[in-house]
Length: 176
Image (tube, rainbow, N blue to C red):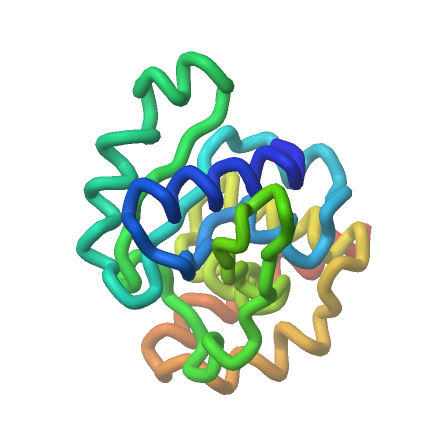
């Protein structure tokens, strides 16, 4: 996915849901901070999103421009309507959202997870593809191990207990 494709999804999802602000929580949130992120981080054709002030409208987005929709068939990428509960995030994540708004979004605002918060959410998900994503973020120095370590303190103890060994594994792989 390219940054312009993310912007297209922001525009389309905002229009469909009649909302001016969308939260982007999946892997493609990296394009908010790094518009030309390394290719291995932009492989996914999917943007996980929900309207900030009307999360229930995520189903409308998913049904209109989601996977296997005419939008997906036409452009090769799509929006996946999710909810705020989809990702495990540090306590102050909303204060660090990265704004994407320009002519290409028609003024609709995409609020992308910050890179460190994105890394934490990927570590919490714990799938192999998520571990590879975080390792790549560390390898390309899009996030620092120290910043992730600091942010772990914002997780609930049970979440931190799951995330720390996964983080240690990614950090070790990135240092090789």
